[in-house]
Image (tube, rainbow, N blue to C red; front, top):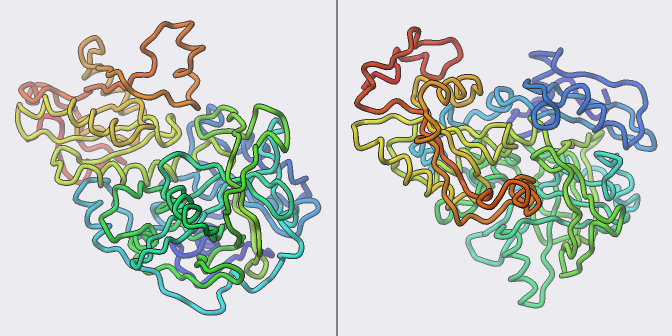
Amino acid sequence: MSGVPGSAPERTALSLRAALAGLRARDPRRVREVAEPVPAEGPAGIFAARCGGVPATSRDRAEDVMVFRRVLGHRYPVVFGLYGDERRVRDWLPGLPERATPAAAARLTAAALPPVTVRDPECARVDIGREGLGSLPVGRITPRDAGSFLTTGLVLAEGTAPDGDCALSVHRMLILDDRRLTLSMAPGRRLGELLSAALAAGRRLPVTVGLGVPPSAMIASALGTRFLPSGTDKLAVAGALAGAPLAVAGAVSQPVRVLADSEIVVEGYLDGSTADESSAGPPDVSLPEFLGYDGAARAGLPVITVTAITTRPDPFLHSVIGPGREQSVILGLAGALSVALGEPGEPLIRDLHFSPAGGGMLLLMVSVRKHGPACDGRLGPLARRIFAAHPFAKLIVFVDEDVDPAVAEDVLWAVTTRANLGTDAVTGTGSAPLSMDPSQGPEWAAERGPGGIGRTWIDATVPYRLRGRVRRSFPTLPGNPASSEVRSAGDP
């Protein structure tokens, strides 16, 4: 199929098309082809209805991949669902630790591999700059959206520091016209710091936007920059995830690098210009957020002025619907590593898992191993540290090692039989509300009363002194990470 190859020599961590080719060869039933023509507004809704999982729909399942071969008015296919299965993504990334422990995260960053520079990259073979952004098969995710958004644009920008300091992050970008994109950016992002520094110096900030980027770059982009060791950037961590360095190249129109194995690259600059998302559509809705609700249109967003657009031969556009398993896997895998990096040397943590029920950010399961009675009292301080460092985290559930933190039923079993919520659920106050979580808004508080924006942790572990009395009857369960060792909550 044009644009979506059936085989490729590249390693899956270094090329999204190679990852798709590998899935086709290994499990072709997980790749659904849509051969009939669809309008650009259609693929997202079709994917959500047929394949979308929690929180986009009530279906608890890994998402299949959908390839829309013919998008009316465009010559490139659109692909949804690629990251919608955590096991699939783990298989792509040989350097990703099976368990997110502080020691494993430290080993990952210690194995960081800086990218290598190549000439004549595949992503620059075809110049479609004259056609503009309208040549890309980008449509509204829902009919209510403010306009057409790029949902997987990975922005690369570089500072002026000698160590090659860079920002690598994904942002939603509203297409204003053929030459302009808004860029929605949360406070505290490294990209915002680089932009502020450039504007203060009277300069533009050159950027490249990769679409269909290597899987290792996508996961690394969602890491918290502040948790990385000094001198280690996300491009190098992406190399560690891949077990090989990423390829970069010089952009064709800007003094900044591009990810050479991207499917499509948009080049441009930020110069302080701003625009409102509502200028392109309804006054109050942007597009679906990762928690499953429509997002609010934002005002005064930075604008990227486009100077070039290039592609691989026969490219495809990768997109996500916002909520759903795909977004949760990307955010959750990176989030678990960020939490682990933020707790160096913490021996309690045996694994970390962000649940799709919280969009990969709000609900964190922490598997712990207690070494003595004093560990019972260490969960609260650990929870408070995580909440302070990760403001999106809303609920933390601590479980023993015999509970799989990635299996929701197992976690709920622990909450049901190893926690009495009257004493084992603790809510702290003083947290800032998350605007995209409706339960933390002022209207909710007016109905339910104050105190709804706290952060809660649940101790669903066996008290250390009772570990000999509380044992699973069958402690080694298929699929449980603890299966390789015969152990239970009662084992020392």
